[in-house]
Amino acid sequence: MAAKDEPVVIKKYANRRLYNTGTSTYVTLEDLAGMVKRGEDFSVQDAKTGEDITHPVLTQIIFELENKDGQNMLPIPFLRQLISFYGDQMQMIVPSFLEQSMSAFAKEQERFREQMKSAFGKTPVDLMKMAPPMKALEEQTRRNMELFQNAMRMFTPFPGSTPGTTAPEPAEKKPSEKADDLSELKEQIAAMQRKIDSLS
Image (cartoon, rainbow, N blue to C red):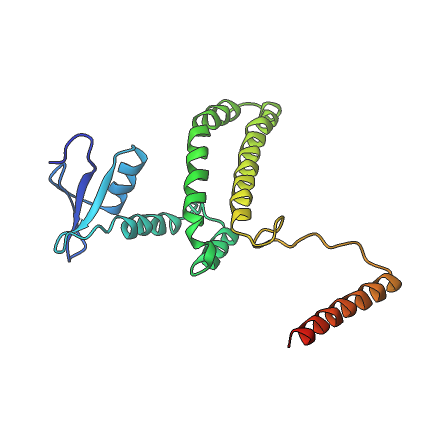
């Protein structure tokens, strides 16, 4: 039996059965999802090797929930973006960003929940008052994106540019300005070439 502050150990056997060592009972993925919702901490271990397999089991729970009718929470654009980060240099930042975003959302969820509860079950006019909680949610999302963009700037070689975004296009130059820029660039290259020649 795990100590009070330690996570409950769930053992996964070769036959895919899950055994809760805290309650001495076999459990399902649905039971584990219920434990998560109740805030009960647990770790899943391979019964044979003792390897911690909590991550793949939690991922499997999400997969199961996403495949239930009407339970999809992860939008297709989000899934595509998430997949695109695998193997990318940004991969190491994404988990921290997602964790902080979800943590911030979790802190606000009770307030949102109360506002939503008070808005539903009323007249259509009262439902119009749902705008404030939705605005608060949008504001939280916007703040999270700003945090993410600020974090990205630390890893970007050029200030003001963020991976996945394009720098604002400069105003269209007149043909005469373009020609001047080109001749200036040519002159700079020629000057550099002269310096190199003088060194050799």
